[in-house]
Every structure is written in C-alpha cells, then in structure tokens.
Image (cartoon, rainbow over all chains, first blue to last red):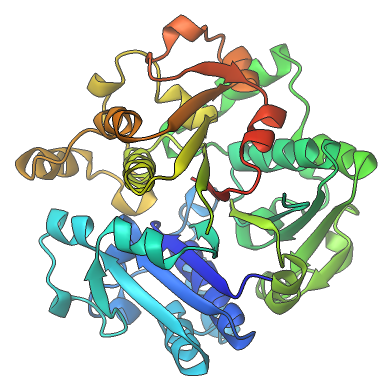
Amino acid sequence: MSEKLAMILESGTTDKLMAASILAAGAAAMGKEVTVFLTFGGLNAFRKGAENAPMVMPDEFAGMEAQMAQIMQAKQVPHWLKNFKDAKEIGEVHLYACGATMDMFDLKKEDLEPLVEEVVGVATFIQKSEGAQTVFI
Amino acid sequence: MSEKLAMILESGTTDKLMAASILAAGAAAMGKEVTVFLTFGGLNAFRKGAENAPMVMPDEFAGMEAQMAQIMQAKQVPHWLKNFKDAKEIGEVHLYACGATMDMFDLKKEDLEPLVEEVVGVATFIQKSEGAQTVFI
Amino acid sequence: MSEKLAMILESGTTDKLMAASILAAGAAAMGKEVTVFLTFGGLNAFRKGAENAPMVMPDEFAGMEAQMAQIMQAKQVPHWLKNFKDAKEIGEVHLYACGATMDMFDLKKEDLEPLVEEVVGVATFIQKSEGAQTVFI
C-alpha cells in the first residue's frame, strides 16, 4: 500500500483546484503523506487573496461561472483554499511552489498564500514523490 | 507489476472522455482491474442520454466541434460510452459517482447512465485505488 | 523507488506541453526511464514545425497568448520541443505516437517531428508503463 500521494497541480480552473483540495484532504484523513507541487496556473491561483479571486470554469462549463458560484454558496461548499488548510491540520500535507513559474511570473514567496511552504525545483519534487501515487491535475 | 488502474475522471470534454474510455478498455483487455471515479464534469457527462449529448472540445480545438464530429463519424470511431460498455464486458471495470458532485448538481442515481454502479465518497475511491496506477483525467 | 515515469500527453495547450517537457527532462536527469504516449491534442502538437506553431493558453489564461509569448521570450524560457530534445540527450526518453489518433487525423509518421520514434497502440503503451509512476497530462 502506498502511504504517499503526490500531485502536480498545474491547472488554475476552480474545478481542478477544488478536486485537488478534496483529494488532498481525503488522503490526509486516511493517514497518507501528501506532497503538492504548484506550477503555472495552479501556482498562480495561490497568489495572496485567493479566496476572493473570481471563479474560472473549464470548457464544458464555459459561461456558467455565476451559476456555479450560486450553487456552491447555496450548498455551502467550502472554498478549495479552506480544504487545503483543513488538510494541513488533519495530516502531513506539504505545498511547494515551482521555482521556474515563480521566476516566469516575477513572483516572490510573500506574494503567495502562507499555506505554500517553500519554493523548489522540479528535481526536488520528483525526489519527494518517490514511491507515491502521483497525479497531474 | 500493478494489476490495477484507477482513474479520477474529472473532465467532461469529449476528448478526455474518449481517452479515458480507451484507456479503460485497453487495461481491461490486458487483465487489469479498472476503477473509475466520476466527478464534476466527468460525472456530468454520464447523465442519461450521454450518447446524444453534443461534443465539447478543449481549448486547442475550440470551435472545431462540427469538424471533429464529422471525422469521428467518417472514421467510425465508437462513442466513448460504447467503449466503457465494452470495457465492462471484457474485464473487471467499475464506475463510481462522486457523492459530493451528485449533491452539488442535485443528481440522483437514476439520472445517470446505468453503467455507473454506485455513489461513493472520495475516501472509498482512495481505498479502492490502493496499489493502483492512478491517473487524473 | 520507481525507476520509470510514464506519461500520456493528451493536451495540446502550450502550458501542458511545457509542463510535460520539464517533467520529462527532470526525470531523465535523475536517471529515470521516461515513456511518453502522445495522443489527441498532445500528438497534434508534434506535427512538423512545432517550434513555430502559435501558443495556445488554457481557460484561466484565455486571451493572454501574446503576453505569455512576450514573457517567455524575455525570460528566455526554452521551447517545450527543445526540452524534449534535451531530455532525450540526457537520458532514456521515448516518445510514441498513438495509432488511433494518427488514423483519426490522417497523419503519417513523416508528418511528425523526428523526435517521435514509433506509432503504437494503447496496449503497447500500457505494457511499457508497467511499474511506472504514470501521469495523464
């Protein structure tokens, strides 16, 4: 049994962030170590103030942002950032920012949500994901 | 050798549904146990009548829906739902619906294609995917 | 420790191609065997002349193609095709084209970048990915 889950979170649409956060929280609750590598759109979504950023829907729900926001409010679906926070409180969950993306977007560590622990390169992530079930989101 | 393939099918664009169905059928034909967790767009695509729903293309093929539909008809490419049906006949393939998505979209089990066996939570999927090669689509 | 990384590269947006190429190069540099299965949009992106094809951004960066191209030029970010070339020089990296996609798009092997070694079916890819960390991009 794999005790580790690793994810490369590359997409910044709300549905993917939500799926990643629920998966991270679920795995953490089951005692797995979770390593998240935030890159490109996934990292961009973790800029400070993430909780107030507008929703972005993928192709098959294009133009349905307002409707989705309404549903999620009515159903009291927690924000994906809240899920990641909970995941870190429940278990061993680590979030890393991709160094190359930081450089490309001229981002500094203090521009990101404090949930993000460290800026690392892809080699470090590959090492940390050894023996893990690894998903690309 | 891993005897199991697990997939989280989160996307509802036609190309991703097609890729997932071909992968499921291929793995089943090679004797692997396949577990599919349908969530968000991936689950939405399994509403009853899936075979007659319009195609949705991803960004890099935006606006090419009609052309793609024509090609697939000319080449007699089977519908992705047909591939999943075949996969279940060939081998051990299980499709589960994500409970949180069901609730969010106010879906009931009977609203879905009968291919979907059961509504489960993310914890159940994580358990079922133990030891599996796991992909997020 | 898994000595192998396998990826199904299905998406053809520039960010996903870039992420896949960096992951392939990173894994190759760390001594892993890398197997890439190019399908649908991912294969379409490997048509000859890939280096001069226009950028395609995903939903959350829609309309930002020109700005991204400018940033990547200013930061001297290498083209994803260059990364794959480097990956092949560094280590054991194999790129395969999906036979079903070749047929659907009426593509011949000579229509593709020479980096692509062979046209194979999904069963061959599944065999080659045995025991690998497998990601779907």
